[in-house]
Image (cartoon, rainbow over all chains, first blue to last red; front, top):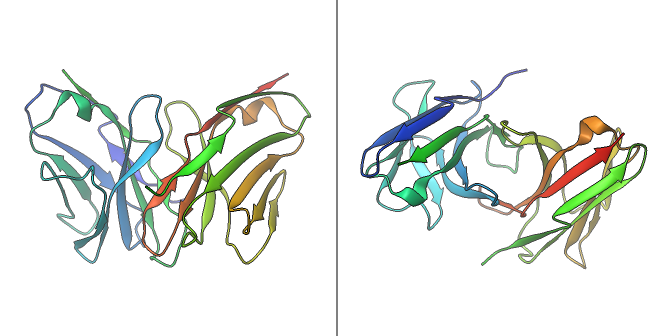
Length: 114
Length: 111
């Protein structure tokens, strides 16, 4: 069964540094998402991306965050200047289209900010 | 804020028993309600989902019951097994793409 793959599985970064989290969505999917889960808390939506532009974003997704689809397969989340509170699991997801189709999640990247 | 409230936070069930997890939503524009299962170190995996035009959906041992007027939906796991021990999240989605998740229920099924 096709899967969403995320790399790295764990990223340790000094506060203030830039970090890029990478995802390969399922190949025939058109919508891509990033969510985060702070330890012990609920999964929170960050951003959705369709047709090479952001289609929706939450208040969490401020100017320090950006997303990009640099080629036909990868989808990235960049955090420009990391803060301690950015420490979380970051999940990438994809879905076939926007008509309330199931979103399939990767296994996440654990981001630890020191 | 468009919240989804999930209960209980944790649940212990004997093997063979029925596990019941409840969720309530606020936004009447939500029209897609999935349940996700998450094992430690893994991402949420879609378990079963329902749309509000039906009141119940069953897939194997998993059933979603949906009450549109009460804005509530629940997951029933019949004949619960130790392998079902995981964290379960309900979620809701409206016209946009974002999923709004409940707080999660940690289920433990005792052998």
